[in-house]
Length: 119
Image (tube, rainbow, N blue to C red):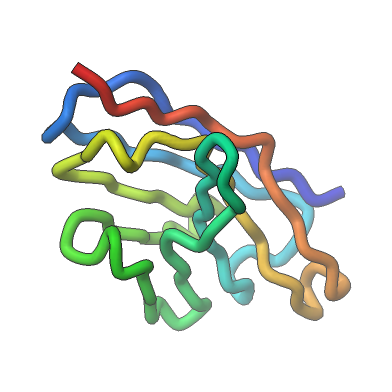
């Protein structure tokens, strides 16, 4: 079955950096678009960054220039490098496997990892 396991969250001071990882299994990772979303308290889950199978990316305006999404198809892993973190980046971050033939057109989520930016 499809599994997405995030890691790398934690507490960091403003201006600091974190790298999130999402290890995927149970589907053909290399052909699948992947994304990172986040959900802050009392807010809706929102797209942070997305990477297609060909490596093209797009980002939410709020993170452009600070966050970088990447993928390692040999390791079935997608990453989110977060630099210059701000308190407003505090949220639970979720890995997403977009619906495709590889996932039998189902949308899959990881369990989430907490990122807290605070001094």
